Length: 358
Image (cartoon, rainbow, N blue to C red; front, side):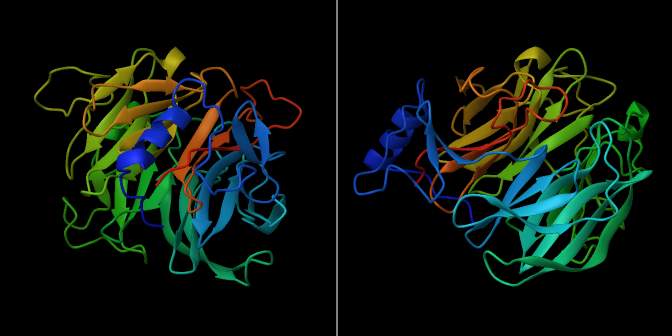
């Protein structure tokens, strides 16, 4: 889907008032405050759907939301009544610790999935067959395999950039040195054509590697000018928000956070892991929105001041895994309290809806 344009005038003011501080559930005049069918109010934030099982990624096929479930390997769509319906199961998923069915992306009526399959992570694609409420998955086709996997640090976010290329985040799979090895796919952000070929204009001839020196990046997004941003889990010291440049090295494991070392690109922001653990991100309404797991908060970084940030939903909904600008004009945020590290409420996990966005 295309990114929302920045808000102007009273719409920008409305978003700020909706999402700042209390997030008190305001709506645009003339809109239905109850939202789409199945949405319910939760402390001023709409709940789009509840009862998801270790969800990891939410994307859209036209106006239909598709969600990956890490442990079950299921892809579910949100039906008209707001409930989840199984679209299909990725049979070769090997769940375990942080591995399983991870990121999803949609491109030209195909669903792309990043998942752990034994000793590797893999990207496959499937034709999306049927219509909303009856979607299914066609036969699988491998786009890229051989991405190192481990119980931890699998990366896993995939998305199509404004250039039409497929980007994927790959963690170091527990082998920090691999992030500095250009011959390894681990600890990298990768760039491919939709068919899995290496684009001619990649920074390294014949290689899908777009950037290196990453520990465990799990969020990628672009602003309207085409600038790419990525969130990254640090180790014990600093989590990061980076501006991604082709061919650049972001330092792991030689450095963590801002190092002032000319060999590496410093992050534009860094946070203590206890206050962050940043996963999925979205760009909308002139800001980067970052879902945080351990920090249990949604962080907003304005594009016109990448050194500033505002925190929302702090401690209100537990662990937050993904954020996306939805076609309904709202920001959707995916909770992740059933992943074995959270404290799930009876209705977890959920998709929360904030906004509206322009």
